[in-house]
Image (cartoon, rainbow, N blue to C red; front, top):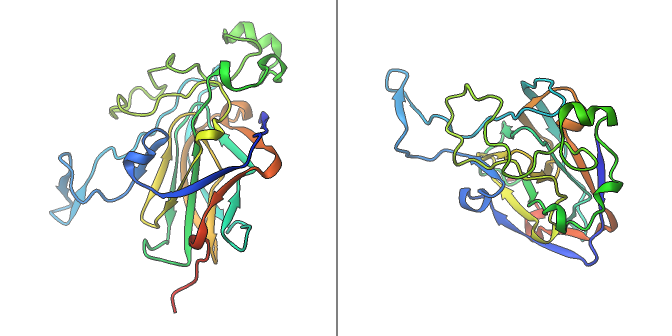
Length: 265
């Protein structure tokens, strides 16, 4: 997969916010029990309440032309190393999936469990003109002979669709209304000046919008958390995932006392 670098000039300190639908809306959606919704329906002989289409599951066509398949993967994520006596987490890398949503669903985790929590760290995407990188210096994600065939605009070819140019998912036969979902973010690097961090409960799952920059899952506490991860993959590394390394250890999440997680006695 392609890997880029970002070197913030000054220390960036990120506070932790609770995960709410409104706060996370620029980056994707959260999945939790809404308790009530106008679209809900009573099913299973009156023993269950169904909330349909709670989060998008989208795949856009990639330049290689290779179709992606929906995948259910299991991630077993171990607790991360913290700094400053368990009060900070340093962000070293962000990644994005240019053509698919990605949903993380924790399993076996109680919402009130004080011994295990997880952080979601996300960032907006810079415009190409303002991300401070000479794009001609980036290695092309495909052999140069592919550039003409797939018709990628720009030099060099770049796998993420330009912002606003792709409105119809490849999975367009879905009945899901995608009019309110986060569209592809464009080709720029992450905007570290507006990076956000959210503390998640055990009864919350998250869906990253297509092309959303995010940190690999950050688990806090005394043991691993298992996640069912739902996304599309086509086996072309440059189209499945991109990474941006953050140099210098200058982006830190201020966890505070929330990093001092202890099990209930």
